[in-house]
Amino acid sequence: MKRILFYLLCCLSASSLLFAQTEDSPQTGEVYVQDSVYQMNQKGDHQIKIELALQIPFRPSIEQLKLGGGGSLGYMYFLTDWLLLGGDISFSYAPTIGSNQLTFIPILFKIAAQPTVWRFEFPISIGIGGVFQNYLDRFYFGLAVKPSVGAFFRINPSWSVGLHTGLYIMPQWYTHPQYNYTALIMDAGLSARYHF
Image 1 (tube, rainbow, N blue to C red):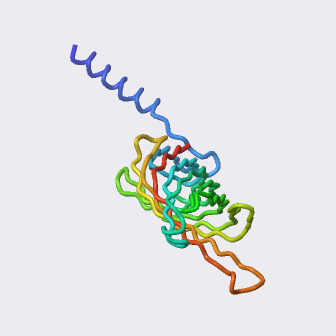
Image 2 (cartoon, rainbow, N blue to C red):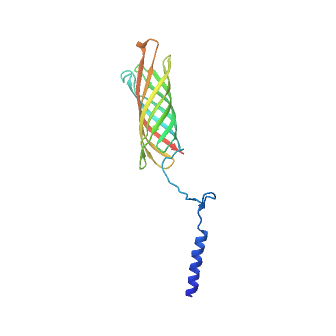
Image 3 (cartoon, rainbow, N blue to C red):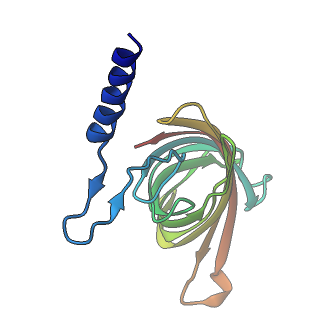
């Protein structure tokens, strides 16, 4: 009986050695071990973002322009696990004290850095592009720059939600320099992002 158990153990050990396989490279004999590491963000990942925001005018001042609103749709691509490149298109409006509307539509290309801590993400970005501005019968297309920051919580691998704030810097340059003007309008609001 002891011999049978001994032979059985030997057979099991030999079979486990025979069937234990590794992937060998036929040219070099190197052993490849397949690792899988989960990170919230990796090179090649994508995200789509939707934002709703309150527009807070600094220039023109709140005495000339009331609080407004807006929204944006954006896309970002991860160049590394923390560096992103993409863009946004937004629509914003602000009523004036004379019950008229200022509307502006910025189209921005963005670069962002996003440090993460546990399931929290903190994007810091700068966007540059053009903005269509309209007030009464006046129309202007010009430069727009927007630095922004945010704080997001990753609910699951596909979704994160959070807060964002940024400052639209929109200069207007004319032939006569005395008419040049730079609008400063802050936006702050809620964001949702889809990661894939």
